[in-house]
Length: 153
Image 1 (cartoon, rainbow, N blue to C red):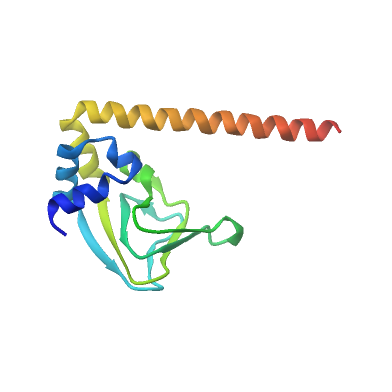
Image 2: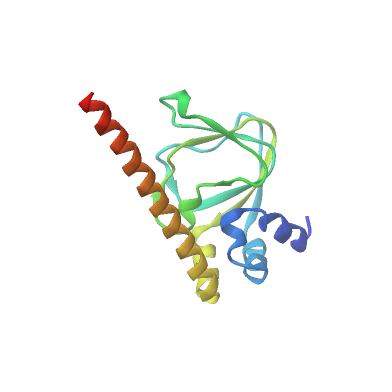
């Protein structure tokens, strides 16, 4: 793909769309594309995560290696290991290619450097992550309330 084609593709990824075209060009130029054979593991649960991956082609099964009911599939346009773009973390799931696939690996160091150069993009990403964390907190509080009410019956 040409740089502009990759930029257009990344604009379809919700978190990456927030940074804008100019910043995405930097991401595309600095990222690397990787082919992953069907059945190959892209990353393992609990392994150090220093990059996120955008699925360009193919599909991955994400599983926690213990409870298969938590497993799910991800296809083109999905961003895997999103939190690794912003913080030191470990992978929460194992990602295994279900079919021959291509991913774009975005190292955290590249993403953070790009955000340094685009402070407005950094604010939009920060605000988005904060809003999603607050939504998760509210949902957990609601579930907690439902569970507490169930204990009283």
